Every structure is written in structure tokens, then in C-alpha cells.
Length: 204
Ligand SMILES: N[C@@H](CCC(=O)N[C@@H](CS)C(=O)NCC(=O)O)C(=O)O
Image 1 (cartoon, rainbow, N blue to C red):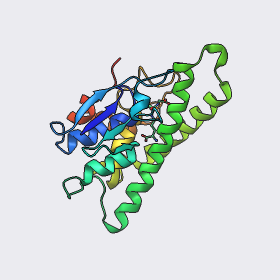
Image 2: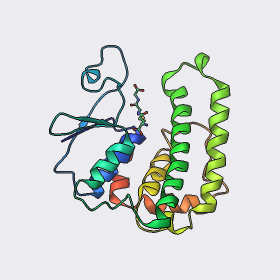
Image 3: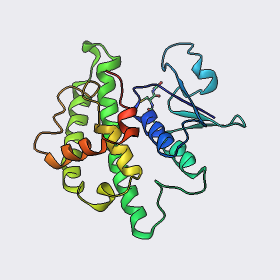
């Protein structure tokens, strides 16, 4: 099997964390690709051009970090991060959705800086996503103590880590998510000590 991603994609990082946590690093080859651009050879494999993508031995290509994480977690028949335990499942999915909402927003915001000239940047979009991200950071400050975020690793924790851990150089400018949020700051520092999180930190 092959996992395609960049080293900077937070979505790719979600899949890479699951890969390591499930002990699959020897079974799945990580292929670093370049995204975007005209005539990019990656489009022949994945017409959407997005990462992550997982190529299965029978040639099936899976796109999207939700699907890939689900697949990798279920390969051994013993899912660790997708818990099917009554009330917990809704809580994990609720918090994962909230973290994904923050990830989607900060990614849009970040791309304004990465791919647009200053004159092309939308101040409206930047301010909208900045406010959303800070509101969600407040909400997570209230929630990080709860068992789903402080207990055994799950998809909600993995996605939240990919929004906030090790992205200071990559994160949009003027995103002071640590300020006034000591519990969230401590949570990110704590989860950052896991090998899979530290090991997948985006390069500077
Ligand atoms: N919903 C997708 C989002 C993936 C995504 O947006 N990936 C970005 C990199 S962070 C990408 O591939 N961008 C390349 C492009 O837009 O062509 C997921 O969860 O995997």
C-alpha cells in the first residue's frame, strides 16, 4: 500500500498519525508528492489532486483523511480510534467535527497567504476564518478537560492536534490561540509528546 501526501498537509498528517499509531509504517509506503500546478503527474493517480490518498494493493485509490483513517484503523479488525461505545461515539464525532471545522477554516485562511499575492488576498475571508478559529479555540478551552479529549487517543484528539500542534510557522499570521487559553495550550503540549504527533510535525 502507498500513502500519498505532502509533509505540510494537516489532512495528510491525520492519516500519517493513524498509520504510525496502528503500527503500519512497514506495511504502507509513504510517498511525498507535490500538489497543485498545471500537468502535475499526481493528477494521473488522483484526479482531484488532493492529499492524502491511499493506494490499495488492488489499485483502488482512497481519498480523504476521514476515509483513509477509518480504513487504516479497521485493517486489523480491531479499531482503536473509532470507538463504537454507546454515548462515547457521539461525543467523539461531535468533537472531531468541531476540530475539522477549525481545520477547514484555518486551512482556507492559511491558503490566502500561501497561494495569493498580497493584492489578491481577501481580508473578508481572513477575518471571517480568524474569528471562527478563535471562537472554536474558546470552546475547546472549555472542553479539553473532558474525558474524550483527555483520555485514550481517538480521532477527535488526532484532528485537534493537527490543527494546533507544531504549526506556528505555518499557521496564519495573527492567530493567538494560546492567549487566555492555558488548558488548550497545556493539552497541545501534552499531546505533542506522543511520538506520532512529534514525528509528523510539519517542517519549518
Ligand atoms: N477533506 C480532505 C481535504 C484534503 C485537502 O484539502 N488537502 C489539501 C492539502 S492540505 C490539498 O490536497 N490541496 C491540493 C489542491 O487543492 O490541489 C481530507 O480530509 O483529506
